[in-house]
Image (cartoon, rainbow, N blue to C red; front, side, top):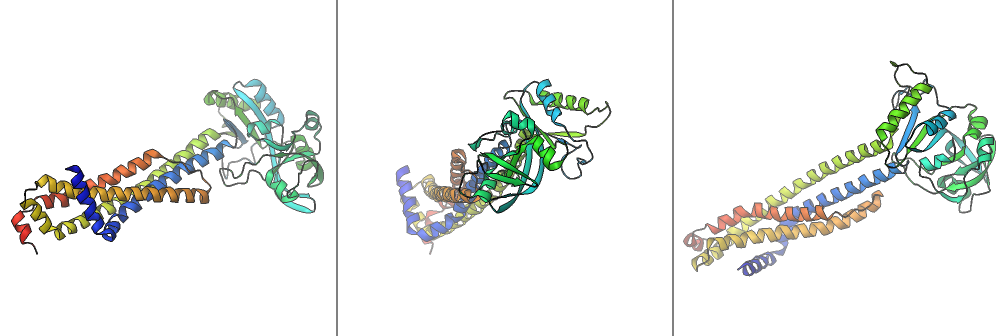
Length: 402
C-alpha cells in the first residue's frame, strides 16, 4: 500500500512539474539559506579563532594604562623597561617565554624603493610568543642583541614590496637614519584578527631600536606566553602582583597597566560570531514557514481540482486513511524534494562564498540533516489539513462536483 501510495503521489507531482517546482521554491530557498548562513558562520568563527591564535599561544599582552582603547591613559602611565620582562621570566612560574616590545612606524628604503611599515624592537623570544617562523635566514645572535647591532628581520610584505622576487637575506635596508643588514625573513601569517597585515613589519634588536631610532628605553608592551596546561588565573594574578610591586603601587592604587588575555578575546569574538550565525539562521528559517504555507495553498488547490478523482476512489472502496495518506505523502515528497535541492544549492553557494570571503568551508552533516528533516516536517505540518479535507469528502458530493 505504501509503495502504491508513493507512486500515485509521484505521478501527480510529475503531471504538474512547473507548478510543483514553484510550490517547493520557498522550501528550496529556506533550506539553502539556513545551511549557507550556518556554514559560513561556522567558517567565520574558525577563521577568527585562527587569527587570534596567530597572535600567540596562551598569550598575555601587558600594556601601560588603566584600560584598553581610546582614552586609556597609556600616554601618562609609566612605560615598562626591558628588566621588567627579565623579572617576569625569572620570578613567575607557568611561563614559557617573555618578550619586551617597543614599536614605532617609519618609511624603510631599499633598492631604490620605499615602504611605510611597523618597526618593532624586541628579542628572539618575540618569535616564540607570537608563533613566528623563519622562511629564510636566521634569528639574531646573542652578541647582536647585547650590542644593539644594525641587523633586522623583515615580514613577507616588506620583502615583496622592497625586494620583489629575489631573496632579501644579506641585503641592506635603511630604517630612518640607520642602515641595517637583513639576516632573516619571517614566514607569512596573512591578515590579523582586526584586519591588519601581520607581515608588514621590520624587527630589530630592542636595543638597536631604543638607542638609534627612538632614543629612549621605553617598552610599549610585554608579551607573556604561558605554558600549555598552566592556570591562566594564577599566572595573571602573580603577574599583576609582581608588576604592582615593581611599579611601586600602594594597596589602594589602581593598576596603571592592563593585561589582555588573547584566549579570552578569541572566546569573546567566537561567541559573537556564533550568536550572529544563530540569528541569521533563524531569519533564514522564516522562509521555510513561507514555503510551507505555499505547499498548503497548492495542496488545497490540488484537492479542489481532483475532487471527482477523490470521490471515485472513495466510491469504489478506498478508505479515508488511504486518501489522507496519498495527499500527505504528496506534500511530504514535495517538501523533501525541495530540501534536497536546497542542500545541493547551499553546498555550491557555501563553497563559492567561502572562497570569496576567505573563510574555511566546514561541512556540517548535522545542520544538513536537520534542515532536510525540518523540510519534510513542514510537508507533514502543512500538508495534513488539505489531506484531511480530501479524506473527509462525501463520495456522492465529490462525484457531482464540476
